[in-house]
Image 1: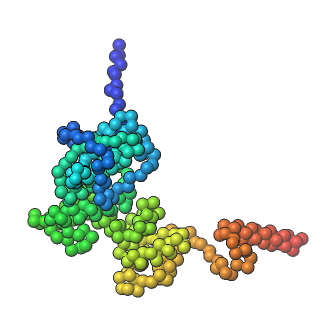
Image 2: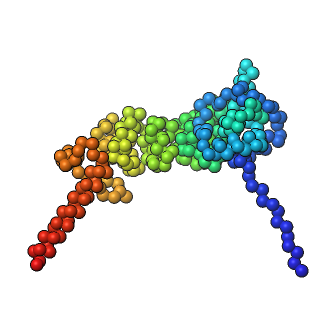
Image 3: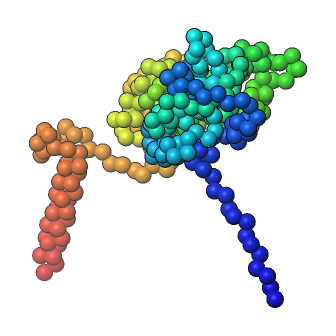
Length: 316
């Protein structure tokens, strides 16, 4: 006779688990927890991670309203009976939405640089992080490490060494668990104008072209963005390398950016363009691009039909 074995119940993560790191949950069991009024907690200055009132926030708020904040926030005293938030910005916002007046917190004594590193490390464990969030987080951590005497500018080829003799950029990459080239590329993104950085976040502009564009001045980047909007396309890596080369010798202009963007990409479907002024007399001034395209296609269809009829008549 075979005895059926009882399967161990599968424990599913709570909504609170999805918005916290394992280290935060572990620390909550080891350190003292204090209940602090939400009105006394200030957000982290220059916090690089977005806190959005989206569906995930709604679910977290519902969970907190029902179960409370299961994983305490991490704060540090900032004087005058106020506290600076180090980690837990989304939990704080969800608690506000849920109508809570206070939340459980772990109060730690830490300096500015230590707080930056703790804030960045706790948020980098999230599953979904935008390129812009990662870029500014890496950059903030870089600055904190510089202040601690651990490293210098990762975006420059001239980097200093720690007293141990190891290259500081290697140390950052090692602590973040990424390659030094990847860390350097993300930090370069902080030099993009907001409009282009938003395109990177949206996935409309790839990483390598964006890194090359980061070497352009803000004015030159604005030229590129205008050209992208006008032509409804994004630059290839080869095109951005070319722009960077012209910018380096001081010859890049708005017209040259437009010209480079008009070059056909290897994977680009060939397009046929008709100057609007040459067909303007056939359309009302307010005609849209789609209306013009539709009418041109219809006219070509009628022309094709007329030529076919003439061919039949000639054959008869």
